[in-house]
Image (cartoon, rainbow, N blue to C red; front, side, top):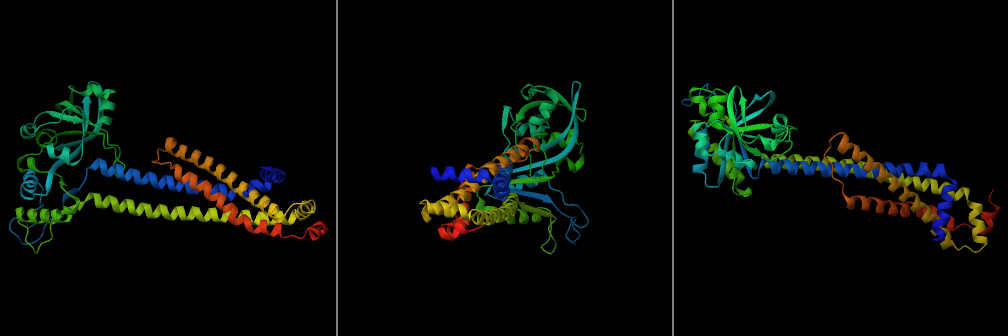
Amino acid sequence: MTLVSTALTSLRRNLMRSVLTTLGIIIGISAVIIMFALGEGAQRQVDKQIQSLGTNLLMVHTGAISSGGSKGAAGNVNKLTISDADAIKREIPEVVAVGAHVKGQAQVVWGNQNWNTEIEGSNTDQLVAQNWRIVLGRAFSNAEVRNGAKVTLIGNTAATELFDDPSSAIGETIRVNKVPLTIIGLLGEKGQDMRGSDQDDILIMPLSTANRRVIGFSGTDINRVKRLTVSVDDAKNMDYVSEEIERLLSQRHRISASDSSPFSVMNLSAMMQTRAQASQVFNSLLAGVAGVSLLVGGIGVMNIMLVSVTERTREIGLRMAVGATPRAILLQFLIESVVLCVIGALLGLALSLLALMIGRYGLDWELALSLPIMLISVGGTAIIGIGFGFYPAYQASQLDPIEALRYE
């Protein structure tokens, strides 16, 4: 305890130098903690987005216009239909559900309130495939999808904008593109998707209701869909099911083997995982840069300690003359180095917490504080203090008392 007190007294005597010495450690610790918080936050955000979309999903989109010579395909845009969704579910056993939907934007009116929101027409499988929860009320039925019932589900954001209290929306009738629809269910919150769009700012109605009444398709277009969402029973079957979907759609739309398929099948979970891995690599690089700044801070501590040893040569000689052992001198300078680094680490920790609070509440960043990382960072600076402080401390302990007392 006496050595710690002596070390603190010495640091207070050279306060400005001590503050400047700790700056490198403060910046390094702050950078390490902030980088890890951002990286972990990004990973959690990706995990949340994957969970909100559903598991083991394949997205089937309409691709380019076909231009080959196959019958019925030349020069026509191949459109996905609800019949395609039924065929995929019926003919591929590994498929659990096939969601079909169309999307658009519409002005929604209730009383004197109005709100522009996303509208989606879907079948019942779409709710299952995309992991939508009904937290109040009920979902629409297959019969309501077939009959084009004037009902809808509403997302939390849209309900809040129209009714203030989302729970009061159930049973109310709203007008969407002048079509009256009764709200029968409140959707569970999902948050933002991977593009940053609010998934809760939405109305989901039966597919036929959207096509026939709200969007206003006619003729064969009333059965068209924008995208199919295919839920697969097991992740190991994803590639097989993807190939089977392409084969089945090519067969149904009379696309020959020599033509490029106008349909694209994407593994959404794989795409998100690739994005997460890229984010992890980037964050690891940033953490490496932060670690280098911490290393530079340690070198700064060693330089200052070497200067301190030189300036205090007479003091060291005097302490040795009155009985201080080389070991005691070594420990004193080591403790000074460790105390400098730990103080810098604590200040860096405080600075990083302040920055993260501003980021979380002021800029709405997704952040994740990690107690183990904080403890490892602070503990690591103590090791840096020992590692970079040992050489100056050893130099001090090896001084000859007589020569040290003669030093001017």
